[in-house]
Image 1 (cartoon, rainbow, N blue to C red):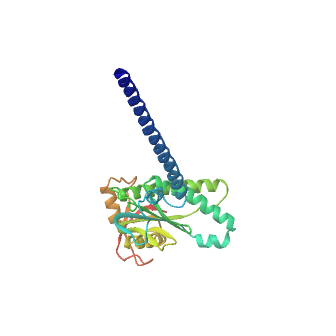
Image 2 (image 1 turned 180 degrees about the horizontal axis):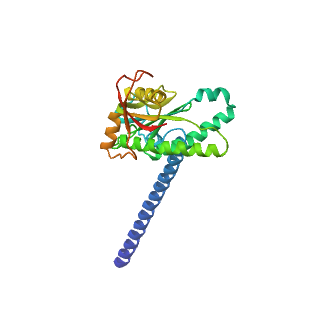
Image 3 (image 1 turned 90 degrees about the vertical axis):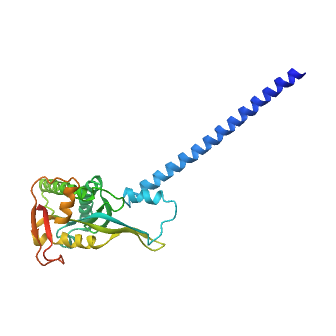
Length: 265
């Protein structure tokens, strides 16, 4: 009787152990499934958000531990890039609306991937203008160099686009660009119903003015000597010698500001 009781007790312990292990495995499987489902949902949400925001900002939104509130900001050393179609207002007045939007789509589909591949973040589209940042969303040690390399690639892309347009009998498109570096504030603005991540600061304003100054300087892409020198310290190597100039009064750009012509006409 005693030996039978011992055997029954041992078997009972085995059953309990098996049940406990089974229960733990079931809980682990349920937990794993929940994590997988959450991961899939977050990936789908990030993919949807990436259509409206940059991948970096989409990731910030989907992985934020708390609700993002307006008024949150961070100071960064960053590069600002402006890209703009010359004479777009006149085109908008003359072109069929559908053809105009198609032109914008073709322009942006060529420019945006290059900016993103170069490490840039699309801050916003301003009609035909593209405002991008390097080192604003995520801090970077090569933001100026990345911006300069990106401009070099954008110039090539613009040239290739005009070759494609000429083969089908369309006129060339003139694109202006500018890069400025400096301290900016990156953060969320708006109210509780609508938020927008953006950059604020003197470099943003100067970059917009510098892009317009291309018309006065007879150039396609301009930057400041300060930004260009910083880019070189960060490892940028210009494919050819860049001309250095000083600004004249115009387009709101400070007189005597030392500039570098990244691409001439």
